[in-house]
Amino acid sequence: MNAPSRRAGTVATVIAVALAVGFFTLVLFRIDSQPRTHVAYLYADTTALAPDVDGRIVAIHAHDNQAVHAGDLLVVIDPEPYELRLRQAHAQVAALEAQVSLAGRQVTSQNSGAQAAQTNVVRARTQLKLADETLARLQPMVAPGYVTQQKLDEAVANQRSAAAALDAASSQADQARQGVSDTHTLEAQLEGARAALLLAERDLRMTRLVAPFDGVVTGLQIAEGTYAVAGHPLFTLVDARHWYAVADFRETDLAGIAVGDRAAVWLLGDTARSVAGHVESLSPGVQGDVGGGPGLPTVERSLKWVVIAQRFPVRILLDDPPPARMRIGATVTVVVRGPHVH
Picture 1: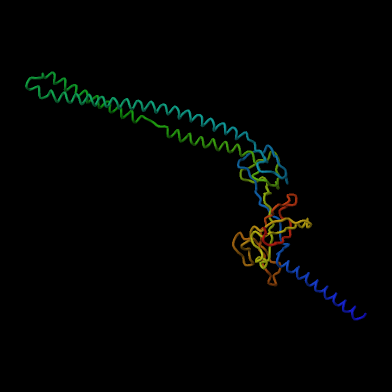
Picture 2 (picture 1 turned 90 degrees about the vertical axis):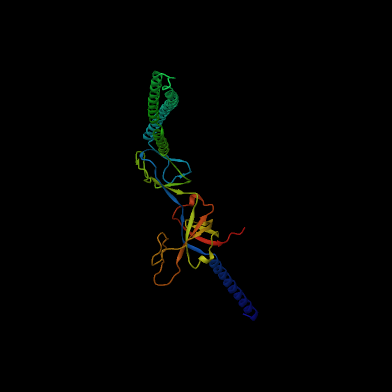
């Protein structure tokens, strides 16, 4: 091989090596600048649906793994006992309303009687005043003979009679005032009956268990005839409105991750397509080897005999997740691609 050929081959080799080094350098840079992890899974919030009332289940309008929408009827509990209680509550309210009305009329009549008795007291007091004035005027006129003793005796009798009449009228007025009742007790009972009516209406509504949000039914293992107990879950509803990837990143990667950063998520069962998302939050801590605060997530270290970076959960909110591919616990790969550029 002549010298020019050898030189050309050497140049080609050098260029190839340089390109390879540049390629691997670019790959390492991208890996370093775009944190990624295979330790991740899909997650969605779930709600254990439980009835608010007891009763026999008479209809089930959903099946396991069914997608439902907010407001969809899922389960019906026998409404008959609650319909009867509602009728009973209506009757109780009606009865107390009638009693309050009757008592109100009685109170009005009693007040009228008390006012009439008080009017009699005023009249009797006026009569006594006149009798006192007449007696006082006649007494000095008896000695000179201007008035007979009989006239004075009549005035004394009239004064005593007026005083007795005032005492009687005052006593009757007191009794009339004391006899005036009120409707406070009945009104309080009526208020309680109306509250019981509202509760009965609510209980009847609660015999129809509806979906509180768009989701997927799971764990439904009941049949018609099952006796439902208030507060005891019948099945679980997966909240399909929001899906997340929970990715455990090494603590050395966290400096390159911020809330709002774009992310790409690949499902293990479908690596050809990624799902876009963004970083919603970074965990403030995990359960360490020596323990930690209650409620912190536990992320085990894979090696015990070397010092390795701890991993911290990063929560990725998926922007437009395909419903058919979303399953809680599915393994995913997550790459954080940095801030969103508008």
